Picture 1 (cartoon, protein in one colour):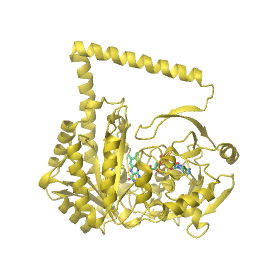
Picture 2: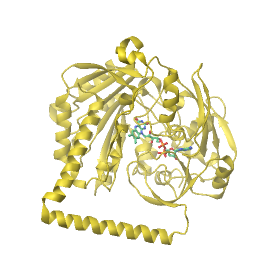
Picture 3: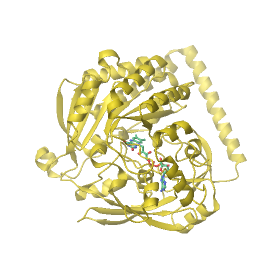
Amino acid sequence: MIKLGNVVKFLAVLILGSIAGIIGTLLLAPRSGRETRQSIKQKGQNVLHKLKSAREKSADPNMKEISNWGNYPQVQVKFHEFEDLETLRKLITQSDEVIARGNGRCYGDSALAPEIISSLRYNKFLSFDKEQGIIRCQSGVLLSEILDVIVPQGWFLPVTPGTKLITVGGAIASDVHGKSQHKAGNFSDHLIDMEIMVGDGTIVKCSHTENTELFLTTCGGMGLTGVILNATMQLIPVETAYIRQESIKIHNFDHMMAVFEESENWNYSVAWMDCLARGKHLGRGFLTRGEHAKIEELSSKQQQKPLLISERLKLNVPFNFPSFALNTFSVTAFNTALYLKQPNGTVESIESYDTFFYPLDSIQNWNRIYGKQGFTQYQFILPKAASREGVHRILDRIAESGHVPFLAVLKLYRQQNGYLPFGIEGFSLALDFPIKNGLFDFLDELDEIVLEYGGRLYLTKDVRMNKSMFTQSYPNVERFINNVRDLNHGNKFKSFQSDRVGITQ
Ligand SMILES: Cc1cc2nc3c(=O)[nH]c(=O)nc-3n(C[C@H](O)[C@H](O)[C@H](O)COP(=O)(O)OP(=O)(O)OC[C@H]3O[C@@H](n4cnc5c(N)ncnc54)[C@H](O)[C@@H]3O)c2cc1C
């Protein structure tokens, strides 16, 4: 049986195999192994030395080296935390180059700035109406913590991304989406209201009907209007903690698009694609679709406690992999094995919500498989009519380039609200690339193709898009920038990303 969960099983095998391979290389090739061990020891001593001198140099205990999920860039910043509003107000009014940070699950530099205010300790639940399914909490609460509270009571998040390890503030600021985007839209579509501390330290409440400019600029606004303090969210009712899933083998890109269209009435859909397959196999993979399961669809064991699921076993990637671990050979082997294991046709199963929505959360630190240089996710979207041709051209260009993307995820979208909406009616493809020389120049070339077809890139995954690409692809940039300047008291809130794409510089 194949499903997206099998991506994780294959990934686990790849990780364990690679760890064994790396250890084997060190132990079984005595000469080169000895040299490698000495070099690792030397590098370790260098790192320790650097850390020691950095510690000595920095009298400021708030200085911290930090990166987000892509492990690139790694920067020294002033890192602040707060638990009460007075502390936050002082931090905001005394800093001029500051950005809020949640759990650092954005891939690039949108939550990085010379000064960072972490919301992780501002994480209390404020109320939960179990009759109406309305929950209110502070912005540092993680979606995983919300699920732990609401699922046993028969409620679920209407929109959730591919990891539950993000904060409510991060979910709003990136206006995240998930497998339900084509039906349920984005996170902000289910927000009742929120409060924000803006640049002069005042607190402003906003919603779809109150202070709407602030609301629309904050949802998907990448933290540039202030620090989101709390939010009230509408949940959806569920009978069980399980998902009825169908997994369909896909033979090529036309087949992929047809099955996505045919799945439009399903609440959840997403596809894994073998991004290295060429010719008539281009676009092969499998599409997974799902619905919240009803009690009668569960096994008799599951029916005994339909709203409870058991803890999943967790694997950890203990160290950064060497850069050679992911190459054309290993990724082709991984993709081919994954594709071949999927039986033809459709496979039905009942999955826990955890396995269905968050397969990668069961491998802690999986970002280390890309090595210490880190990685970036190139997530683009193209209008539906242009998707077939555009995706073909991009995959062909990648095949010639020598840059090997690892996981590739395809998804159908509908139009998104807000001033910086990623979602348009079309297909998005997300490709993970290890960072190496020449990658960013190559991605600039892909940007040209995306632009030519009327597409854009997802800001929360981005780490290198230039100003020209950003301003040409996001139609409401000017209004967004003007609003940020008004609401933000100049450019107090800014990130390395917002400077790079020209919002705050
Ligand atoms: C494995 C994985 C899968 C993912 N899948 C998806 C997916 O399917 N769909 C999707 O949309 N995204 C996805 N993401 C991206 C992730 O959901 C977003 O980047 C999210 O914003 C991260 O939230 P965070 O709490 O970690 O915020 P951070 O990464 O810390 O910050 C993200 C942005 O939010 C701002 N921010 C954070 N907290 C606040 C606050 N309190 N007030 C104001 N601004 C704030 C930051 O300034 C920054 O601009 C995925 C990420 C990972 C690692």
